[in-house]
Length: 189
Image 1 (tube, one colour):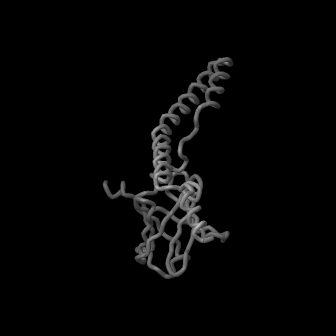
Image 2 (cartoon, rainbow, N blue to C red):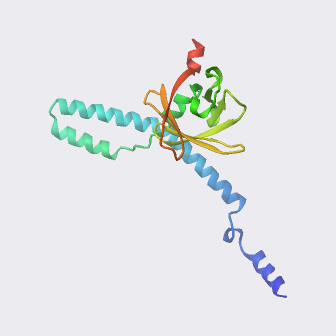
Image 3 (cartoon, rainbow, N blue to C red):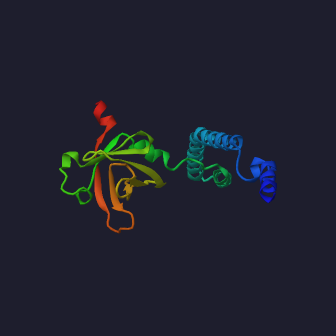
C-alpha cells in the first residue's frame, strides 16, 4: 500500500519539480543560441563605436575641448564592451601548423613534429593519429587536451601577432618555445 501511494504521489508531481521537461531544455537551448547570435552580431558594432569614441576623445583633447572630452569619456565609459576577447585568437590560429617542442615528442623528426589547428577546435599531430581539443582560457592563451591511454593537458600562450608561442604542461613551470611553420594563407600564395 505504501509503495503504491508513493508511486501515485510521484506520478502526480509536475515534471518541473524533479527535472526539466524536454520543452524546457529546448527553450533553454534556444535562448542560449539566440543570446550567442545577438552577442556575435552586436560585438563588431560595439567595437567600432568604442574605437570611434576613442578617436573623437583624442581629437577633443588635441583641440583642448575639455567639456567635449568629458562628455566623450562619459559616453566611452557607458559604451558596451562585449567584444569577444577570444574571437581574434580563434580566427588567427585556425589553419595554422606549429612546430612542437622536442621535449614533448621524444626523438620525433622535425618534419613530422607539428600540431595543426583545424575547425571546431580540433588539433592534429604530425607524428601520430591522435587528435586533441583546445579551449580558450583567456586572451592569447589556450588549453590543449589529448585523451588516450593517458590524458595530457598543456597550456599554450601566443604572442600578440600569433607567430610565436610557448607551451607548458599544466602544473609545470617551464615554458617551451614554439613557432608557426605554416598558415593556410601561405599555401594560397
